[in-house]
Image (cartoon, rainbow, N blue to C red; front, top):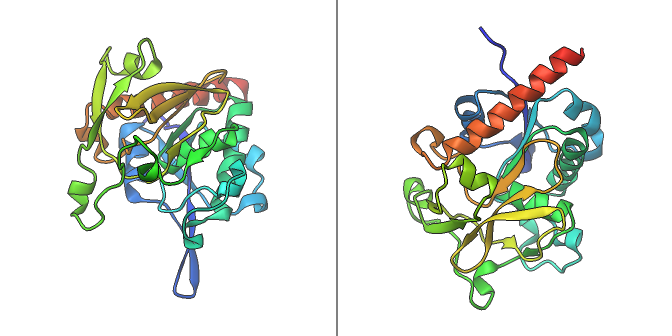
Length: 255
């Protein structure tokens, strides 16, 4: 049996009554197992308590999950426009360090939803804190009262950038339809990022790190949802998994 690459998944720091805990949604874990054919390792949101560079050196990939929480606007020099309860500073401290270490060490990096926003802010970009309040922008939020299946259903189209990595993975498609479960989105694009897809209102929906030494890609939507049943999502995880296996083989040769 061939060994599977080891992928670190970002966890969130939350409290239930008086008991703090770390969590990551099962849909992300299963997408790494079945979509990327990799072994997931949950990385707790402990910030500086972890030696992130040393940890990343032992991984074959890093996956940044979505979350109900938001990036602290102080990280892009803005005043907070949402409830304090939606902050998760421990996650910010952990994922920003994971991004820096993964890019520095050439470890494949894939990020979705909050992870997409973290990547942009970590590299010097900023966010719209309430996209739906911006003139000319659509409401990208889900109906939280609807059944989960409906929340994660196809919501709008995105147009793929001609000649981009995403278009190549999707066999030259010009557009796809995606789900949409976010209130925030990219405002100022980080200098190191290249847009790969846009919604009809112009909001950036996918990016790649221009100068990365390996796979470094992020999307605003949730491709992990039932990934094996989604032909527009599975190729992203397959590409990420292939990059992780290449990293695993390179580490084996070097050891």
